[in-house]
Length: 140
Image (cartoon, rainbow, N blue to C red; front, side):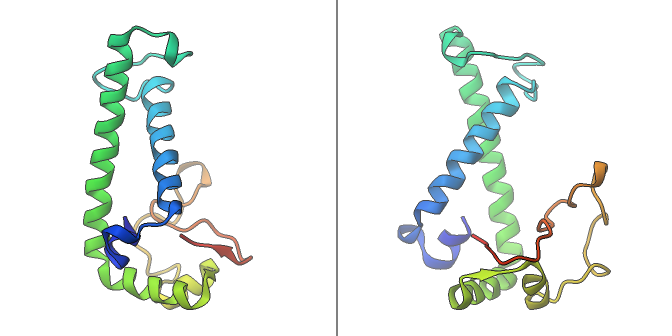
């Protein structure tokens, strides 16, 4: 979605396709294997293909609903943070890869000024935080 907002609808790369595949896979896992659907309930579907057409349809509808809701929230966030998005996009076009430290420096972020908790439960990264790795890694 960020690529679409920066470069336009017709200029989305295959990386975006991969992101969509991963998001769909994760949403299906949440619904069918983790019981994270209020409509379907707390079930575990071991083999999706062996289920009834009705249950498969319900799972698919829940997956689509999750993805559409996530898309709305992401679009809103990207619009709200448009200035930062364009600044980061410009830097990535110039450099191709950036470390977490470089991104935080570019966007004037530091540990004390970040919104939200310092640490998520079980010590994971806070919501919206970039996982820490000092080695240069591509950021899409």
